[in-house]
Image 1 (cartoon, one colour):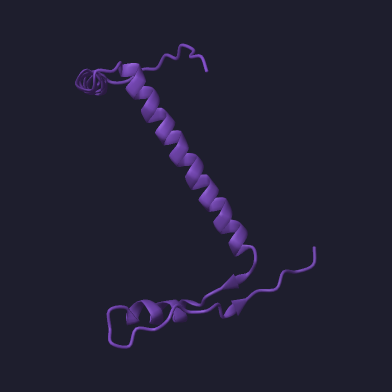
Image 2 (spheres, one colour):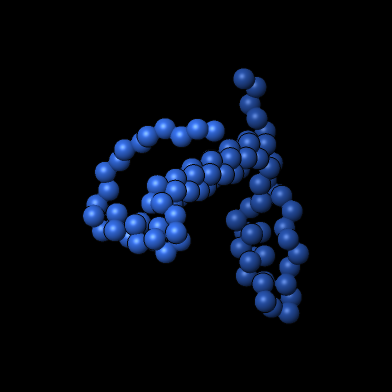
Length: 96
């Protein structure tokens, strides 16, 4: 895939830090900036995907109560550690 020019403004301190790091890695500043932007966009996409999956799971209406979760977490690292709780809240979807 080809590249296209992209111009942006950054403060001098960030520019110097980017150029210093580029020299250390024997790469261009634009290569490092491109890699950083790509990683940020990948992380944002992964976060968005996880949120959408969590919303889809929540839309099923099956949950574990706060009381059960708290009891489970409070039991961690004790002699009587509880097993992972099972769902105990089941919400019915209204007809749409």
